[in-house]
Length: 243
Image 1 (cartoon, one colour):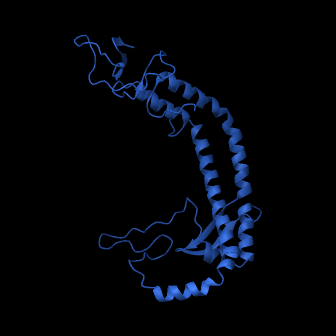
Image 2 (cartoon, rainbow, N blue to C red; image 1 turned 60 degrees about the vertical axis):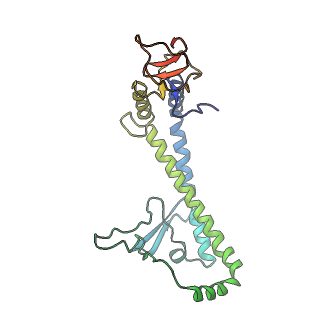
Image 3 (tube, rainbow, N blue to C red; image 1 turned 90 degrees about the vertical axis):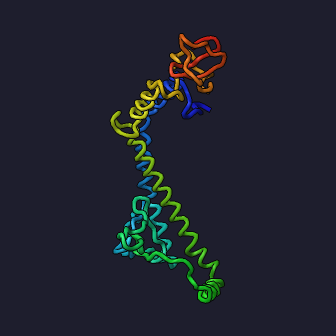
C-alpha cells in the first residue's frame, strides 16, 4: 500500500507524498463539477422550525429527495409531524441555562426527560395497537423514512467533500490546504527535537531506518559511538557512527 505510514517517516518519503498530493490538485476542479451536479440530482430538505415545532419544509420537487418526500406523503406520512429531519449544519443541542438551574430544553423545543418514565401500562396498550399494523407501518412509513434519511446522509457527505476539496486548493495561509499542511510538516522536519521525522538527506528513500528506536542519549565527541541503530536530534545513527 502506497504511503501507508503516518507519523513516523523521513524527508525522502514525505517529499514523494507531497509531490503526489500536489499533482492531484489539477483534478480538483473536475471533481467539484461532478460533485455539484450530484448535489443537484440528490437535492436536500430543510425543515422550517418555529421554537422547535416544524412549520414546513423546503425541497426541490424534481430532486431525488424531493420525490421521496412526495411519495412519503402520498402513502400517509406527514413530513412535519413524523420526520423531524435536521441537517448536519442544524443539530439539536441542550439550551444553556443559568447558574441556578440545569438545562431543561433542547434547541428543538423538546423538554429534557428525567429518569424513569413510569409508562408501562400505556406502553403495553400502544404496543398492542401497533402490533397488527406493524407491517403496514414498515412498508408505508419506515421504509421510505430510512431512504430519506440515507439520502440526506449522502447529501451531507457530498457537501463535506465539496468543502474539503475547496479547502485543499487554497493558499498556504489557509488551514487545511495542501500547501498549509506541507508547510506544517516541514516545520516539524526542521525541528531537531521532533525525532519522529528525520531528514535523511535523500540517503534512505525506502524508509528502512524510519522506525529505528529513539536514542537514549545524543552521541558526540565526548561519548562513545552507538552500537545500535537509533534516532537522535542530529538524525539517524547506525552502529559505529552517524548516517
